Length: 184
Image (cartoon, rainbow, N blue to C red):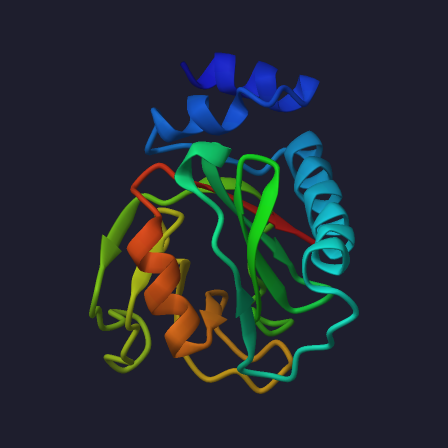
């Protein structure tokens, strides 16, 4: 199944989201996956303009609009260069949010991941029991999407910090297996 997912990822097939969702331990950090995630992040900037107009979000802000589930499978796209996260249903942008990713000494990994585990309240085992509300873990080392402080610049130990209200809404609509593309 992972080989099929990799083949689909490399060909750019839209079936990827469905394939990824059936493979919860899915993570791809190859050059090709990183390039595909960066392309997804670049496209998300264009889609944000089309969906929400010329809005510039300040740290901690997000935008969300109704898109029916019938629009397609969900995926999350993270742009590290823009410090933004995007939620899609199929090819339709649902939401955009500011983020705070990993600092240079503890960078957020890039590539294609999937949500491996979810907990509404979790505490870090590595960093002084730090709270990680609405935690969605994406790798085996503890990197997660979760609510946290958003100063508008990379400030985490590798996680993707989201505004609390956005993190809660995102948590409510994603599942274990939801694809997460993290691009530079």
